[in-house]
Amino acid sequence: MEMGDAPAATAPSLAKVADKALEDMPHWPWQCVVDAVKQCQSLFPLAESTGVFDKVVGALLAQMAIPAPGDATPTSSSPESSAFRFSCDTKCSSLSLRRTWWFEDLVVLSPGMVERVAKALLARGADHGIVARFLFYYLKCRIAGASAEDKKAMLEAAITVIADLDRSSVSCKGLFGILRIASPVKLVAGCQEMLVAMIGRKLDHATLDNLLVQAPSGTGSLYDVSLVLRFLEAFLRHGDEPGRLKKVGELMDLYLAEVAPDPSLRPARFVELATALPAAARDCHDALYRAIDVYFQVHGRLTDDEKMKICKGINYEKLSPECCKHLATNSGFPTRAAVQALASQHTVLKGIIRHSGPLKPASPPPPPAAHRESYDDADGDNNGQVVLYASRLELTLENQNLKSLLDSMHWRVMELEKVCSRMKTQMTKMKASRRGGGAAAARSLPRMCS
Image 1 (cartoon, one colour):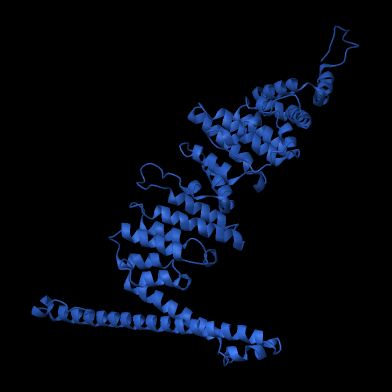
Image 2 (tube, helix red, strand yellow; image 1 turned 45 degrees about the vertical axis):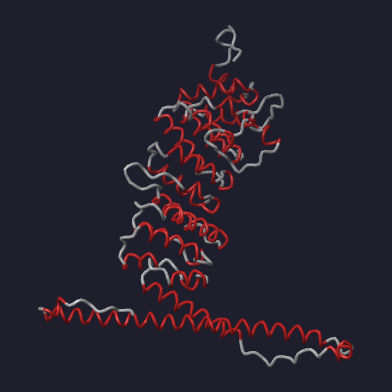
């Protein structure tokens, strides 16, 4: 502070000189500012209560805004190339790279100090994308080789700051990178919830590989289905846009197909997955039907009541005719599901025919070749009549095909209704025979279907 041996009467007080030195801190050399940050690290909370830390952060921000053209930027080794595959949604322009030259000097700070510095920078208007990239760079450099306790502290510090950033500053991929590293570490409940909430809000950007998180040891399952259900719950609190909802619907169909073969996946959990999204999330239920079909094949001991609970997730009117036909002949599905599917398709086809409207009389066919010359000389409306005739002919054929399919499905529904009626009759007889006792109870039931 350039204090000499002047007499006490004429020398400035130490406090005044210290204040002046702190005011001039933005003009200090960069390394002196970094050293001041390190000193604050060992002097907390005194450095904070005296205002020194606030002045140091102000000096940091002023220095960060000045590019260092001659320095190699630490982001030249992008977080994407690391073993952890962290990433951010910031654009790596040459300008942004020049603004990240300071990363390397601050990775030596403790997790608590990194959190304080990052929050202070954000409070002073620092770019959210740059702060996010610094946090990922910090984790990339410090996580490897750290103890479990140090990893926990680093992850909690990073998650706490990231939760305050703009949603566009951090990618879904980066958040799942943190999740995978945090899985073996027991984070505090608050940080776990923050991470789940952040991932849930960006679930429409996730991939199937992101969701295939290994289940905790001791659960017996392959994948952590409970975690995915928490993601869905967080997403549904914010994801009401139709486009985002449909993306998550497609993602969940892929996830259901992946977890369906797991023999340890309980029916109740599978039902939660199949019914978690609202109806607007799926325009077609074919993928959901196929996943349920696989689940039924793997879990062959399910009762019809358990299967019907799972089938509640299917909207039969959103099944394609091919899937509906497959379901009707699928012995793995309960008869009630087949009846409901055929009845729904029956309703759909009736609606199609009803809305197609009555056909007008078709225009006469074009004249024979002998009169083609005179036909060609007619006014130009004849060409439109030919096209109209062809389109009406196609519509007639289409309606005939639909009616034929409708009749076939109607017959099948009637057959299944007969089977159900016969089953009810046999059940009534069986109950009566049990009440009567004796030989009547020992008789075997007759065949219900010939």
